[in-house]
Length: 567
Ligand code: KIV
Ligand code: ZN
Image (cartoon, rainbow, N blue to C red):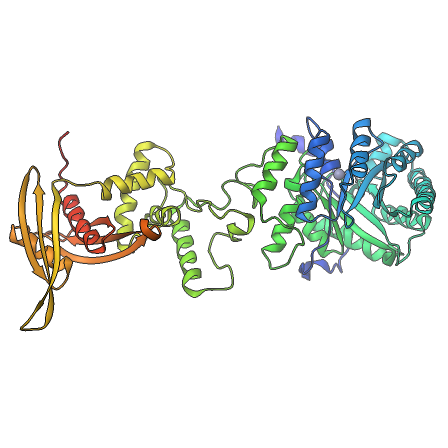
């Protein structure tokens, strides 16, 4: 059924360009960006933005660094007109930002548009008419000459009104023309109509006209779109009098790719929106294209370092949402659940710290999350698929606990068990709680009630000896223990032996500080081995580093006994 259904679609017919040059090129420089969020994006919203929302969005676009912003379609409605006036009259447009206004090639709408921009310093008047084969056939019922006439008449009026306005106010007004549905237009017709418009507007290399080539409905693979752009650039007579602009939509889900290949094919400017909002499946996402450039070492000239805030403003103003797996901006895009990914990320982060590498060399993370404001993001999140290093990474990143490598399998297994029991992902605090219960709070069957540690210099050997004396509770009975050794750990082990605790051998020790200043504490990780060769970790925390180690030993022994206090 479905297979038969597809026969009703006419396949796209690509332009012939066997000597295309774009496939061997790379993007080395950012295009001129033009945000169309406030027009194309806005016009696709269930509830269009109100004045306050548009003003907030405009301010955000300026902060990101857009220098060309299409603010609306002022002749389309009173609201659109008022928004344009508010921006101008409230002096909200920085001197280095050009506002762009869209209008169809219809005289009364063009007139109204010029009234709307009165008093603005820098304006692009963007006029358009549809040129596609399909629209000529089913909408306008006219031939190509009819469509050319509409464009030329529109261009004449735009030029006349511009010249009047410039003479009157000295405004800086530039022109943009779009053969709407460019990609559905026979390519030579698209070239022809644009040449006529350039001539009518009097374009020169000094006063270039923006020729915007909309992929109004995306209907081909991105390589064929790139062929159309390269063909257009090569065949346009007055190429040096034009700035070639892309305006990709995303019907096939390849808007980003089409934009990138279009740049390779010769385009110098890109129109799009944040997060790809726009009609149907949206416009090209400028953030995505810009961040792709950034990830290749090319400065996009736009600042997405606070992407979270930009996303919040976008979601608030448009009432759209950014999905969790959306490139660069989604909640989950810097998160790894799978064990092997977590392990590689931890190693990459450690490699960067150890080598002080000036480059970003972390597997599975195409960019440093901090570059888009995701500093405190839990890169590694823990569910039942997570590996042994994942929980240790969370302890390190979120709480500053540096569990020794040999401890990762033991702690990882405890966390995995808890995930399986909960049947869901565990949050960092829950992982910490497991650690606290399992290592820091375990005081049974052994519990050190009091102790004394002191040093003595042995006169004979002139060596310093450490003495340990203490009161160790076993289950419910207290025992005095004492021992001497070459350090606190050694002295404590000897003291244990004095009361017959001889089952455990010392394997490894590591320690570090947590917290700062007066609140700083020492954390000791002690690994012991029992008679069967099974190892257990214990953790001790104390302001006194020696006591932290002793607590760590008691913790490891308590865990090895497996005894739990009866409630
Ligand atoms: O998608 C499109 O063709 C447009 C034009 C009006 C530029 O938005
Ligand atoms: Zn569009």
